[in-house]
Image 1 (cartoon, rainbow, N blue to C red):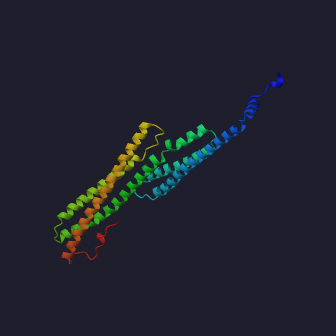
Image 2: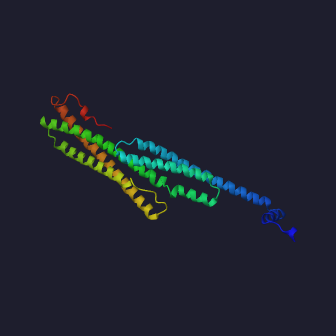
Image 3: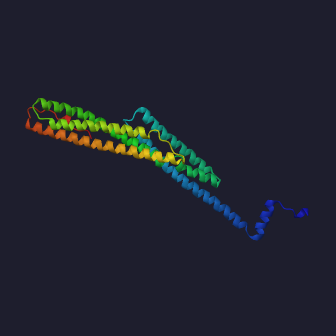
Length: 258
């Protein structure tokens, strides 16, 4: 009986050969390998796109001028951390040989990191808020110059009531723009990926939506402040033309920064 005993492996190989299944088994193995490689290639492309976007975002973060150092450093650290984590994940995916593990790692690209659903919108909001703060600061400086011109025109006998009204509104709009921008930054600064938690996911989306509306409100305020500045400049120019002797020698003070 001993000579008829075969190992399990040998028996399976023999059976496969006798039944003509050996080529089929080899083909299945090749198919699995090709499928895994195709999945890795797809995952690598997704990760590369995210890393490229994050690098561009990092450059944008470094160009910010109005966020506090702590805010800017925290945002830069978040972006850098995500770049490092994406790079590590890519290496792990490239080394995965088990389909289940590869599937789990691929799912983490979107579920665990939320580059497009959280990190990018979060940073975009902060960058837009930074721009609002920058323009508001420049317009506040310009508003001070306009106030000096309004005071001079009033001293020279001009009716400055319309200019004063516009200047008051300009100041209010710039103050609100600054408030809205700072509030938007504060609202999104500490948001973290939800890692599949539906409640956190919904809370993050709500915060991003609300912060974005604050930035939009700030941008609208900036537009209104510019209109008010234009109203004042137009009134001052009209007064200067009618009273050339009272007009200042240079009108540099009425050149609005773009």
